[in-house]
Length: 150
Ligand SMILES: [Zn+2]
Image (tube, rainbow, N blue to C red):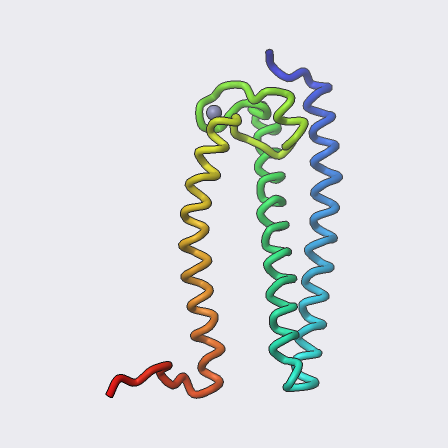
């Protein structure tokens, strides 16, 4: 059973409200991160703490950005008249699922497949960027090798 225009309108309103919320949330996180930058400059000793706090804030903002991207994708699906249809298999997404995740563009099965792929990819990405970040901050101490085998 396809979604009625009034059902789509209801989801659209939910998503518009959520998008506004995210946009202001991201702005807040970025402002807070800039503030932590200031704190980091003031006192060298607090710099690590400030940087960690900033990383947390930006990570949080990053998650929000991702959801924002999904919401925009849902709007695009609405514009194409494809909202509520799984992007992957073309089947209808159950209303119960749209109620839970209005920004969803995949059916439950394809979302699970996509999540599993992302988790695998995400783990690898986190490891890679984590190592890269440590390497960058390690440059402060001269980037000495952690262990020299004699
Ligand atoms: Zn599907």
